[in-house]
Length: 403
Image (cartoon, rainbow, N blue to C red):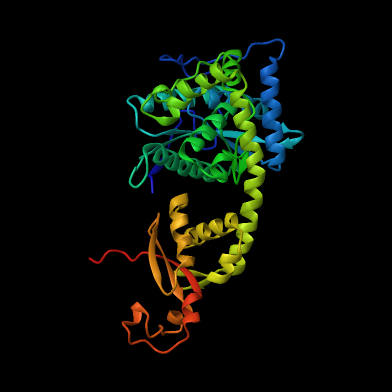
């Protein structure tokens, strides 16, 4: 579990529950500007962003206090500026609202503490309160660096939301991020759930900017006179997501014409409807079939075979998750599902997250094997062969290694 600790948000006035004034403690340097909102006519992109956030908060039931997750980049900084508008008004559609923020320092780059502190100053000047800096240690054991950082970040944001009493966490992902997510899923040969991309709302996480482009958030920062921090890893070709952003998507736009990003994001929206339906059916089916015996679960083989393949694979994946496993790859699901076509006991098939899948025949479950079964060594009890052709798919956590 990544370690997370709250810190003061860069200046002495920032406390867990206090508000700061409308000016920063001092001028900022190194790619940041303190920012002043220009008087006059409202920029159309700002109006669009405000409506997007207002709609998201309405759909979430008008949470009383929300938390903005801000890295200092253009997307999350623009989101903070838009959220600050509602914080100044004190309500959304007449429903009271306050807005706090959290800055997560992953400690993966030199100077990350300075970036976090300056970002916190900008958020304070915008009027968000409280503003926290959460410092995390990224543990990449068993996963890639991007996944490890994401897990650490989400844990820190959940802790910050709990400490502030925030019912919603606002994330600044844009349509461009969604398009990149779909492209990466296609490149990996992913299924419906992955190609459905990021959801506008999942639990406490809200992504109100999924219909805005990255150029829109950059324009909002310009209008608000906020100079964002640009993460150098976003253009680092050693990361697949960075290559997708800098090379692949622009190339597709050039060769196929404008609108590729919008089309990819639309694909995600369409697939979300399909994925939600399949997940609901699979969840209900799993609940009706699962049998629990201590740390393991079992599924009746005959009922599994009768299911449509799309539901059958999802039910097996849910069984793996139920005993502490991770989402299996398609290849691993195929291997586990193939046990249903075996006679007698079979397995194990190893699944990610330390889970093993077995096929147990009814004869074995009854404590007997056919006399000619290899498992019986030719000395089994005389039970009908048909009993070996029926059974259960059993999933259990692997035993810890002997000390």
